[in-house]
Image 1 (tube, one colour):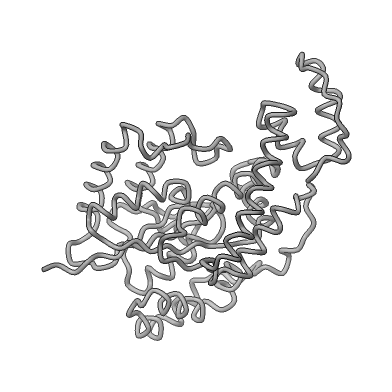
Image 2 (cartoon, rainbow, N blue to C red):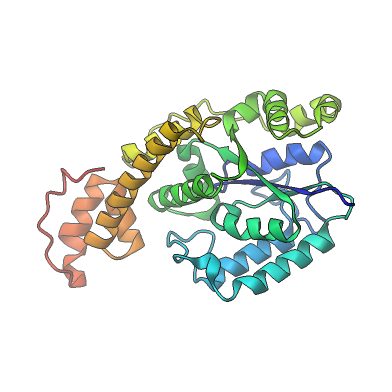
Length: 324
């Protein structure tokens, strides 16, 4: 009788430290398959992603009319779409071909799984395995700055992307055994973080950690280790976004408590109400919307000037006192 497989998913927003974390786990002996995306100029030590898995995730997102960088959300009940069984068959084939039968732990890293975790839980069910999730948290200011440099994504849009990824990762993983890491802690105390993570999941990797301690310390990039995380943004980041991130950090190992869940849900509701208000109530365009959402100056500019020549109806609202 074969041992029940553990599927360990590393998720979080792009540029949040998922590659560094997965690289450390890989050094502890966990494999990520055969067809690996090679290092690149923007991630010289490697992405530690399986090319076939990432391609499948892109295919699923594209099927629903979005990409990894889309602000638009997946449709409601997307997991029940008629095409999902075909994608499940593809995923099953990938896992069978990419990982050896004797491997008890299947390590899969792709930030896109933050949006697609229900699908991958169905894949785990096919194998009668156990899903476990690690979510990497990083100051959104640092993520946004990195996305602007690498992908030329405007800061205002990147903030919305960050929230979409992290809020979905948190919501979808509530009924799964999970562990949150602070990327700054991983950079400064990698051995301690890895030990806590492995202990949390009851992974028998302590000996490997001791053996690979020097290699892991050399692998982790300690430059820019968070000293400038409090740098000011061009945009007035909504307080609810700050509250959401800080709440996850503060209670990250106790998010199953009813009190913490209620607090997170309250923040999510506030954010949803504001996004619905700005997006549907002012401008039905993501670029204009996100500019209005994050900058008072932009709210005035785009509503009073730019919207006029677009033939929009007049909006008589107090721009300065809009809730952020």
